Length: 238
Image (tube, rainbow, N blue to C red; front, top):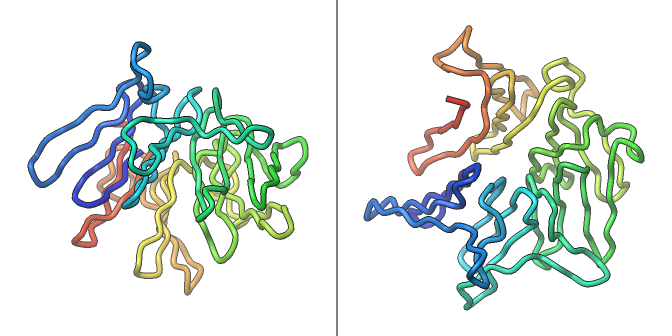
């Protein structure tokens, strides 16, 4: 996972912790789990990162959701006693609201936390959810896009707690959606194991880019981001 904030690139790695690249001075800081130090990040496999001017949130493999509280320089694990304890969870993706409640994608289903109430959805209790491995989440017209591993792309409606298919074409139903990026020009980009999907919101049409019709060297698209010049950058398997 990659995200950009204030000329710093935050890169989540699989085993190497969180790398922070300062694009101005060309330096790299590594944040890794250190069992001897209180307040270090809880795991070195980083699935997701959220950064703003006041906080840093990091979803990990088996280490829960880590965050740095305001005016502190140590990591803590999200734990609301009696409501939600993320310790030991695999947090593949997440979206937070102003109360730091929100929606969390794990390897064991989707967790929705709102107004102090936590609901967990799996293929056992949500028939339209086709996979318990939630790879990506994105706010979408008052709802959430939910990208899964092998189960396609769904729309979760918070007010009804119902999942619906985003579209019925095979590329949206039988696919793995690792990343979702919405630009400022009316397009949503989806990183999948079948290539890069460019979706036109106004016309509701889409184009699939893969190794056979573009310059992509691999069809496995894991992360998408946009730079200050409007260019789309993608991370692939190789």
